[in-house]
Image 1: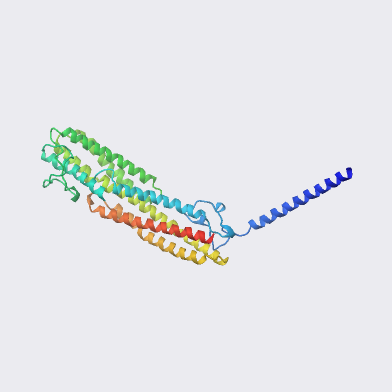
Image 2: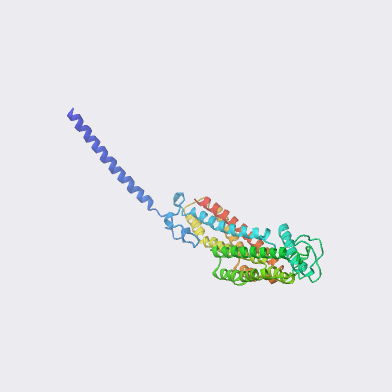
Length: 103
Length: 261
């Protein structure tokens, strides 16, 4: 009985060690993948965050699949600016079409 | 443009009734009837003021007319303060345009209207009231010049700023396309076509929303009314078209992102 228990303990320890090593290997692999040039690493593809109108830091840019530098945040930034234009133009239209006063 | 016309008719009633009716001294109720032809030399300085109203000021209706002018002055002060608030809150206004607008509102219009607010309660005759009412309308044009002028300069400067931001994105988008070409993306041709349209629309918007348009708008004044109106309407048309171009460019950008993602 004691022999069986020792063997089981040894197998469990070996298994645990193997899993730990495997996990380390996998983590190392993922680090390699994450270092693949994506956002901002390609000189010809500057991040949208470099434009004056953007405010999100490059590190927060949403990178498209496949390592493309396309930044989907750009559309949100554009929408925010268009929203500001909408508001000012609506105000002008309201005051011209329906003036608050009469002269 | 039906309502503005209506409002201007009411303006005509206000200005003409106070300016002409007070002078005529005939009985009647202020601002009521626009069916009576305007008397010659009624003081109307605008083609939109042709429709007269019943005389507004007689010795028996003086207090009523005076109260009406005081209310109209108070409303104008409120409007001018609203405009100053809009100017101060408009982050896209250039420093120069902001300074000009604030000067117009705070140095020219508000003190002028407030001076009338002080004077009108001391008026004791219809001719005095008539003169002040005329000044309130014709010297300041708070609603038909100062207000659209302020709104449109803010809108124009905002559009100029948005165009600048869109144009600044072009190198970024070109970089995306270049990257996609180098990585065998099959949608590059579609993205390139969308990018070409994006550039065209941003250029078109930039030709409609310009710094010189703000300068033209700021050059308008009360004395130029109703000629100012065509300037305001043209600017609005330009900005509406620029707005449409920018939204088309936005759709192009969305397509590019979808194509290249």
